[in-house]
Image 1: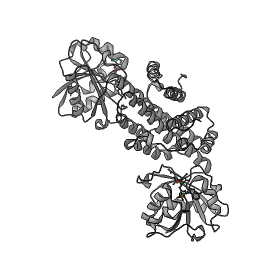
Image 2: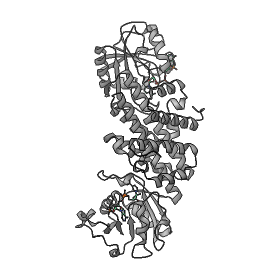
Image 3: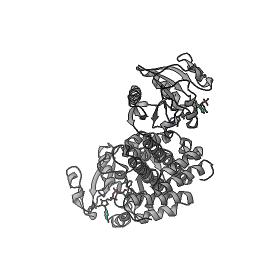
Image 4: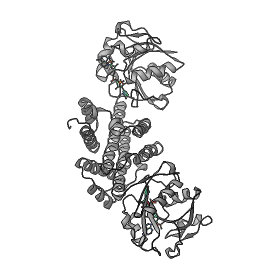
Length: 255
Length: 255
Ligand SMILES: NC(=O)c1ccc[n+]([C@@H]2O[C@H](COP(=O)([O-])OP(=O)(O)OC[C@H]3O[C@@H](n4cnc5c(N)ncnc54)[C@H](OP(=O)(O)O)[C@@H]3O)[C@@H](O)[C@H]2O)c1
Ligand SMILES: NC(=O)c1ccc[n+]([C@@H]2O[C@H](COP(=O)([O-])OP(=O)(O)OC[C@H]3O[C@@H](n4cnc5c(N)ncnc54)[C@H](OP(=O)(O)O)[C@@H]3O)[C@@H](O)[C@H]2O)c1
C-alpha cells in the first residue's frame, strides 16, 4: 500500500485524488489546500487541512499547485527526507527544496474541471533524484493504470513544448478552419471527421509518412488558388509558413 | 435502385466501388479506366472497359480521376443530358462539359489505398445544377451511409482550403513535435494521447472554447522559456506566428 498526501485543489489535484481513491493499492491519507473550502466536500472521506504544519507522514506528497507556487510551498514543508513530487511539465525537479527527496510526476494530458479523466490513457513522466524513489513512483503510476515513462528534466521540457504544438497550436488551426468555413456560411461540423482521422493516422504511422496534400506534392496551382481565396492576412501568413515548413520537411523547394 | 458507372481507378474510385457494391439500393453496372489492368481483378463481378465509347446508360456517372483530367474526360463522354458528377473539392461543377447534367459528389476525407474506409463517418458534399439531380445524389449518398450536405461551389472551395489547415498543417505540427521530442531522445509516443484528446475536444465544443495554454493566458514567462528552448529557426517562426494568432483570437496583445 502506498500512502499519498495531496497538496493543492486544482484540476490536477482533484483528478488525482479521485483516481487514487479507486486504486486498491493506494491510500490518500490527507489532503491539504491553503483554502479549506475548496476541499470541504471531501471531509467525510479524507482528512483535510489548511495547516501545512499539520501534515502527517506519508510515502508520497503530491504537490499540484500553480507552477509559480511550487518552489516556495516545498520549502515550507515541516519535514525533511520524505518523497515530494510536483506535477508540472516546465518546473525542474531541483526547484523543490533540497531538504526533501525530490521527484516529478507529470501527467502529459490536458485536464478540464468537469470532464472525466481516463488515467489508463495518460502517459506519466517520472523523474527522481534517487533511484529507489523512481520505483515507488512507477508503482504509484501503474496503480492508477497509467503508462509510465522515465523522462529527465530536459526531456520533460521538450515534451511540454511539443505539447503546445500538438495541443494549443493544432487547436488554433481548427479555429482558423472554423473562421474560413464560417465566412462562407458552411458548417464547421463537416470538418470534424477529418480532424479525427488526422489525429488517428499518426497513432500508427509517423507524421512524416502521414503527410499528403498540395504542399507535399508541390502542387503550385492549388497553393496559388488557396492563397487567392484567403483574404485574411493572418490566415495567409499561417498558410505560407506551414506550406514552407512541409516543403522543407519533404525536400521541396521553398514557396 | 440507382445504377452507377465508375470512371477512374484511384483511391477514391476504388473505395466508392467497394461501398456501392455492399449497398442494397445501388448497382454498379460498369467500371471504366483508361488502363484496364488497374481494374482487371474485378472483371468477374462487374463489367470493365477502357473504351469510353462503350459506356452504357446509367443513372449516375461518377468521375474520380486526377483533378486536371476531369474537364477533358467529361467532354469525351459519348452522350448528353445524363447525370455526371466529379468527386473533387477544388474543381467547379461548371468544369464538367455543359452537354451533361452536372453535379459534384465530394467526400470530405483523406483516402489512402490500403486503409479501410467507413463511409458512415464521411461527410458528402453535394452540388448539382438541376434540383432533381440533387435528390438522386442525396439518395445515393445515404445508400452508402454518408451524412450528406448541400454545399455550393464557393463553400466547397472554402471547405477544401479549411481541410488543408486541419489535415496537412495539423499533421505538420505533429511533425515539428516529433522533431522536438526526437532531439531530446524522448519518445513521440508520449504525445499521442494528447493528440487524440485535442481532436476529440472540438467534436463537442468550439475550438475557441477549447483553447488553453501559455499563449491564451498570455503567460510571457513560459513563452519566453519556450522560445529560448527552440533552436530551430523554422520551429521558432511557427511558435511565434501561432502564438500571435491565438492572442489575436482571444483579444490579447501581440507578441
Ligand atoms: N491543468 C492541466 O492540464 C495540467 C496538466 C499537467 C500538469 N499540470 C500541472 O499541475 C499543476 C497544477 O495545475 P492545475 O491546472 O491543477 O491547477 P492551478 O490552477 O495551476 O493551481 C490550482 C491550485 O494551486 C493553488 N495555489 C495557487 N497559488 C498558490 C500559492 N501561492 N500557494 C499555495 N497554493 C497555491 C490553488 O489554491 P487555491 O484553491 O487556494 O486557489 C489551487 O489549489 C501545475 O504545476 C501544472 O503545471 C497541469
Ligand atoms: N485522395 C483523396 O483523399 C481525395 C479525397 C476527396 C476527393 N478526392 C478527389 O477524387 C478524385 C480522384 O482522386 P484519387 O486520389 O482517387 O486519384 P488520383 O490519383 O488523383 O487519380 C487516379 C485516377 O485518375 C486517372 N487519370 C489520371 N490522369 C488521367 C487522364 N489524363 N485521363 C484519364 N484518367 C486519368 C488514373 O488513371 P490510371 O489508373 O490510368 O493512371 C486513375 O484512375 C480527384 O478529383 C480528387 O481531388 C480525393
